[in-house]
Length: 132
Image 1 (cartoon, helix red, strand yellow):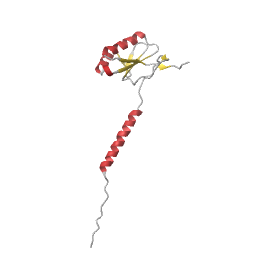
Image 2: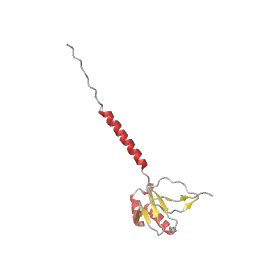
Image 3: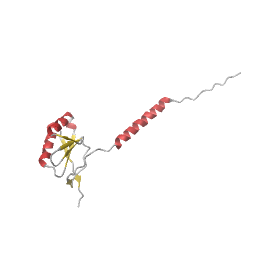
Image 4: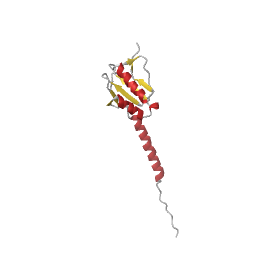
């Protein structure tokens, strides 16, 4: 009598794990790019020569009464200098979004606080106006 050897099929689990991890990483990367940037509404001045700037690392909001907000929280100028100095100030890009009715002296004080921390890349946010 002759016996037939029957082999059962095997499910290879290692390639399946590789594919699942690849899909997981893919969806994480896609989700990160779908999260919008946060911001606060501001009544910014208009400019006919406004240009798009690279994405700043730090966005400051300067209100009409001279208050400064960093990440939606009020901050003093000395605390702003300390915060910027704790980061890498040589590679930090700061954009100041000042309201239309902000005092120029308050704007200069904020810029001085950034410079005191060692930041050299300071930009001013403005909304583009339509050209006549």
